[in-house]
Each structure stands twice: as structure tokens, then as C-alpha cells.
Amino acid sequence: MELITVPKNAIIKYGQLWNGISPAADGPGRIYIADGLIAPSLAGAQEAPLLDFSRYFLMPALIDGHVHFTFPDGTAPSGRAREYLQAGVFAARDAGNKDGFLPAYPPFLLLQSGYAIHQKGRYGSAMGLGAANLGEALALIDKLAAQGASQVKIVASGIFSFTSFGRVGSATFTTDELKQLVRQAKGHGLPVMAHASGDEAVRRCLEAGVDSIEHAYFLSLESLREMAARGTYWLPTLAPVDAQLSDPGLAKQLTPQMHSIISRSLARHLEMVAEGSVLGVRIVAGTDAGAPGVAHGRGLWREIVLLQQAGMSAAAALQAATSTAATACNLSQAGTVAAGKKPYLLLLDGNPLADPAVLENPAALLLPA
Image (cartoon, rainbow, N blue to C red):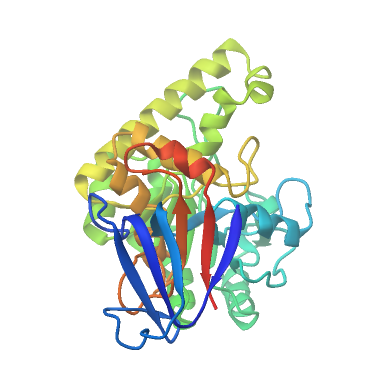
């Protein structure tokens, strides 16, 4: 897969184009780049070089809304960045790690949380720092903001059980504590992403006004309706649970009972994704890459496929990794092919609206100069 830098002034010729919003593709046609931005017309690009991609399908480059960049094996971060770029993913939002902030790896864009904040003694130690009380958690937010965090990650619950259907690690921070943590983050201009599974934790996070809820296994339909009404982003992270069943190395470690429980849990979650899509919940593709069986970069293709299997349309599933992901991650100049945006673009050998498998082997990733 080739990485191509788009000149500040250029004309891009394409065979088909999906703009990140429309239900269908069109083409053939041309895109004009002037002063590094997509322009509405030829003006400003008359003398520009022509990039002829007329045999390719063109769409916005991909964004992964939930990863753990250093998990699981300490792969050199520069090599990991290449894994994302080679998969057509130009940006990802890191959900916290024990190493804190990492260097930049351009042209890949890593939106860093630094350390995830969890309640000391409860789930979350692998992702960041524990707080013994509210004061410590508030101080951690100040520290993360000073270090340049792109968002604040709060761990608001445990994880769901692989051995007992519907059992989830209990909610941690109270609703009032979460409200204060969100207020503190907003004071620094930072959005809040909250790990929450189980309906109690999801409800608390919604009441507290978090920007996105991560996972949300075993939430209720009532909470899903509330999520839609509030405009809260939801990252259902289907890939790590699916991997337990589809990865041969992981599946062979499961007892028949565990296999049944995980299958039922995933089936329920897929049903809730379908409900959420109908209700208008803003669903974002996040792979939880670094979890067992979920590859960095390439795992996003599988997440998009799973969103479609849940019942989302092909366009909606792709939006979850492009236009909707861009708004969730505050990437205002990416996610769509439109005037005023930067040319973060993906070239494919086929139409992913018809066959999402073409995302598995992109032809080239175009990046702005």
C-alpha cells in the first residue's frame, strides 16, 4: 500500500467517489486542491499537476475511535504507526496506557488521552492511573491537560463476564463525581470518553454529560434512547468480543460454557447496535485494538463489517469510521470529501459500499502536504 503526499495545489481524477456522507457513490470526476485544501472549483488549481486515479474508488481516509496504541506487546510505536497507515487509517484516538504520553509519529495522528483515570483498586490499572478520591481524580485531569491530552478517558465500570451472562463489573465513580470530572475536563476544553458497561454505569455517564461512551455492553433500551436524545457518541467495540469467537487461538481456550456466554453477549450487543442505529445514536467505529485478537490498523476493517452485520447500512458503517468519527474526535478538517477539508483520502480497488472486504487491502493513502 502506497502513501502519497498530495501537493498543495493539485487536480485529483477519480473513477468513483464516496464523500463520507451520501448513501451512494458517484463518478467519475475530479477534486481540486488549492492551498492544501479541497476547493469547490478549478479556481486556484489551473496550473496544478494532475493525479490520475481514474481506475480507483476514492473516499475519506479512516479513523479508529478507540485504540490502546502500546498494547499488547510493546511494539515500537513508529512501527505501529506504519501499521495504521498501511491499513488506510490516518488517525486514531488512544484510550490510555500505563506509559502515558508518547512521541508524535507523523504523518500518523495519534489523539492521546495519556493515562486513563480509574478508581484506585478497581478495574483500569492497565490503562493508566488510579485515584483514591475525587480530589486526586480532578488533579489528574489538570495534569493531563497540562501535558497536552486530546481528551480525558475515565474508567466508569468494570468489564462484562465471560462466565456468567449479563454480569458486569460494578460502576465505580458516582454520578456526582462524574459530573465534577466532566466539568473539570470541559474547563480545559477537553472532551470526555468514558469506559462503561452495564446499564448503571452507562446511565451515570449519560447524566454526567460525557461526550462518548465506550463499549456499553448490557445497556438498556431506555439508556440507548437517552444516548440518542443527548447526542452522545457510542463506540460499541464489537471486534474484541468477536475475536474471542473467530480467532482460532483464542477460541480454543474457551470452555463450551464460555463460548455460549460470549456468543450470547455479542448477539445482544449487535441487537443494541441495530436499535441504536434506528434511534439515531451517533455510532463511531472503535476497535479496542491491542485487545487479544484485534490487530492495530487492520482491525478497523473488521469493526466496519461487524457494524454492518448488526444491521447498519453500508454507508452508515463507513460513516462510523469517517465523518462521524471525525466529529467525535474533533478532526474538523477530515472525515468527508468537501470544500475546505484537507485531502485525507483513501484509494481502493473496489466499492466498499458494495463489498466492505475491499477495505482490507487499500491501494493508497493520500495525505496533505
